[in-house]
Length: 621
Image (cartoon, rainbow, N blue to C red):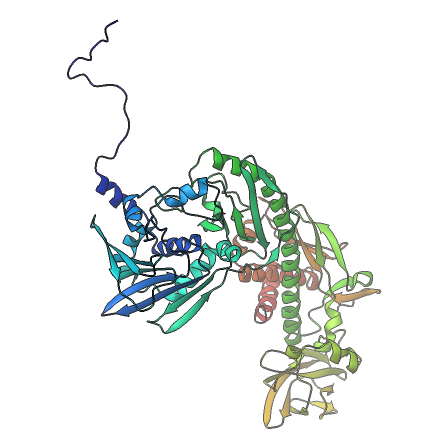
């Protein structure tokens, strides 16, 4: 049968893609690398693939031009049949890398595969020169220029031929002339972390402009290395994990690697892996997926193909395990934060009540059986079992807490205290002094105990090498033991306002303080704690009651202040730690005022609330 001829002018509906303009395609490829540091990493990886054990990166200036040079002791450019570095093959086989053929032949440990690494010099400088010795020891050089399709190969006479390969880019582009040696060091330490470790390569960065030398050490991650994680296996190979766990910080990220080279700094930026686990800030480390396909231009993009989908699906069980670990850590942090907040509030109230009249403010009654213990309660915020500290403030009366109008001094074995005291617990020199209580009311013919409390600049108690001198500046009252730290003030027979002054000396340092004592004929009965109870501040817990107006209440049976963490004020205060601490302290002040002044009109309660908050927030930190 005769073959039918195609009519003239009629085009076929099928065909093959081809490059319309070869040089335009090369230009697009050369400019696709946008990160100059990534280009430097490409040069270093070429040296590692060539078997180099020592690589030196030099940044300097010669003849008024800034340059960057990478030299190594590797095998150099592959040789042709004559033993000469085959520069012609390198320059004329772009996108046809020799490394791809070596991989097909079973050679392992080679990273490159696209044959476009040298073209990334366009993002660094204007010209590139590549120098390598032939088998007979003669030195050959290849040169290329940005924007020029030509190249040249020439011999170079040198006294000592290079042991490996020397690559130089100059002059550097104006925008990256400030690329410091330190920046190169930090980038390579993360970018090539596992490549450096597994191949045991020594990389040195010499910054002649800054006159500094840096050794590139594989990056070490902070935190605790997670063991016993589920092994991640796929049909294309195993995924290597090296994850470290620590407190949440914004800078902590898990990087995505391939064959030991970092592809992305933050794995959570990928669609399909942007879960809360990877972006929580608790984790840092590497997830190495050797079978991923990368975008050739930048080598920092992922092809979202079947390989990537396989890796994403295989990481799901790991994400579930990591989510459980993070939830446990958050529960522990919540417990620790609760304890820290409670300690800060205790200290602030202790200092505040030293300055307020002791007969007007009384502590909460804490059950003796709960002293020094902690009770567990289910947190409505997380659903976890959270320990809430319930320490008794009266145990700290050595700091000068007034209880029942007197001071109880806590005794401790000096030897035992010396063993437990750390260096930073030792007080410094005398900085200030105060009288506790700073203001009080005293009945005619009765006595009051006053104490001078000396502190250093950091607020620690000062007790060594002190001398005391007490005196009455105004009013009818007498002092017993005026040269002691603790004195007894005896009121006269007439109502008056007594001013008491103490002068404390330590060597050449002298500090003074005053206190006011109102001596009156009538006095309200003081609040007395119930028998079997101790005075102190209770712990607190959360109850999520969103939409309800109450902010807190005191649960006397549980010795707890219950705080509504669903209230809009609590949500607003939780934006910062300092604001949240002040908010909780005000809730404590509200409950303490309500307990001490039952039945007072609302305006009087508000006055007391302002008074107690003022003295408390001065010491809140």
